[in-house]
Length: 145
Image 1 (cartoon, helix red, strand yellow):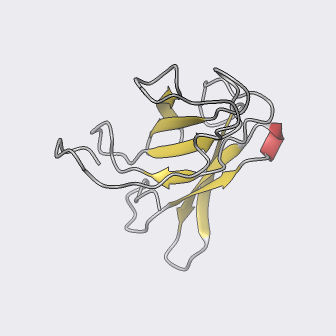
Image 2 (spheres, rainbow, N blue to C red):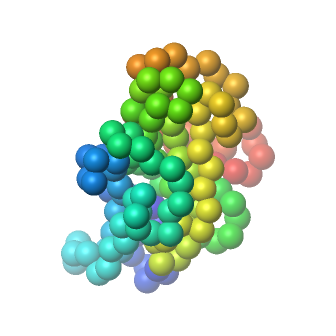
Image 3 (cartoon, rainbow, N blue to C red):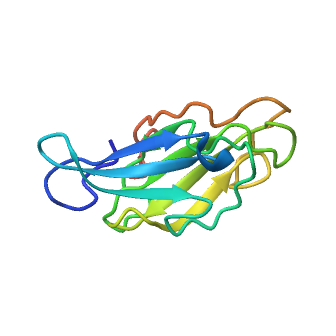
């Protein structure tokens, strides 16, 4: 669940589609109370106001998670895995933090891998970083989940 983006009292969903268009995509599904989809928004290399560089076979959307309102703008944000991203080496993987707008489009993003996003870990070829994502809450007590 990504939270209630459209503020209609019903939680909305984020769904990964890692093989769509040979690069991957995620879908924001704005839900109705009866379990049906009210509206949807695709986020990919060609949709959803996302301008991050996705290469062929990155598998963007292999893992997805709602991460709360990370940037404090009142709108929920998401984390998206791309485990076959080749930046830095073959299939090392990456994690994308997508800061969303209320319409499900991307406001801005931050890519995290061993050369970006202040990540200090060391990744090796075929590590597939971003193949699973889970939120842990606010471990360090700074008010950000």
